[in-house]
Length: 410
Image 1 (cartoon, rainbow, N blue to C red):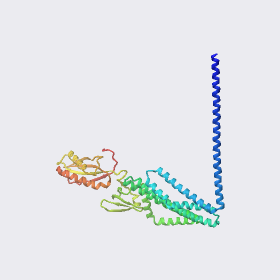
Image 2: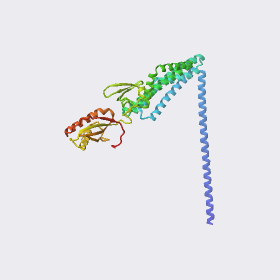
Image 3: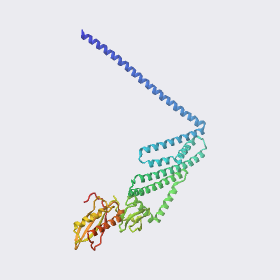
Image 4: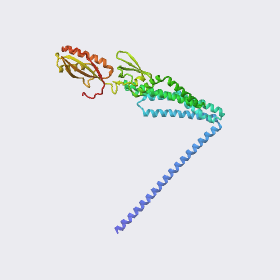
């Protein structure tokens, strides 16, 4: 009896829940259908609005050509302003650390040339609705296209110049050698790019005016061959200078030793020649074509640190080799321009008759301080030898320069 009652209650509850679920499903389906119908209505309204706008614009262009012309020009200006803001915001987010670069680019995009470009483009597009004579429309279009190309040429050259300056500033990191190396490479790159862009501009401009470019290019090719043969030596020096700059063989401020024995600091790099300043304050001008064929020892690459080697000879009766070595290291450590790491060290080379011969090794930060550091070390060695009554032998002291990237004292 109780079991039959329980079954009856379970059946009633199950029927009640099934009825509730069916009602909920029905309500959900109704909500979905209403949402779909609302969305479809919005789409239809948007389509009808856009169709009405397009139809209205078409009526305006057909009935009032001058109003349509002004409308097209205004739309072109609005698009130009939107493009300017988009470029600025995108560039600012991409390179937020280079505020100088994007500030200058923003100045170029805000210049009258860029805004006039958008205005002229709108005028060119609006010529079709004015119903002017075909010949007049063609002449106006050619003139406006020429002006547009000229304005874009000015803006692009300005942005290229700003980009080159930004690279020089943000890749220098207060490092003189790296700064000048980037400077030389990017000067060549920017000038070549400007020349190429100028040729493209002139070619497109002549094509717009209907000038036949074939005979002109043929004549320029023949003239180029004649000039090339006449200026063969000069051009070899120019291309030699470009190859030296791009190859980064040396740069302004590097200390170099040439194959012919000349040594000094690279004073100036030109397209035809390079100026070398010796330690006697003499300027040697060497054509780049000759330098490109030389073996050049660059003591400022890959890093600027240099080892200086000085040879000393003393009387054997004045002090033991251990004492001389210790005094030489003490004298060297007193000099401000000498690096403390790697530490200076001395080798006892050989006893030669009544004399001892030593080799002192120390490091300086750059080759530019070679003479001053050598002078200071000599002064300290003479002073400390006089205090300890050590005499120099008659043999001359020799100085040798070596450029290596030492990581330890070995």
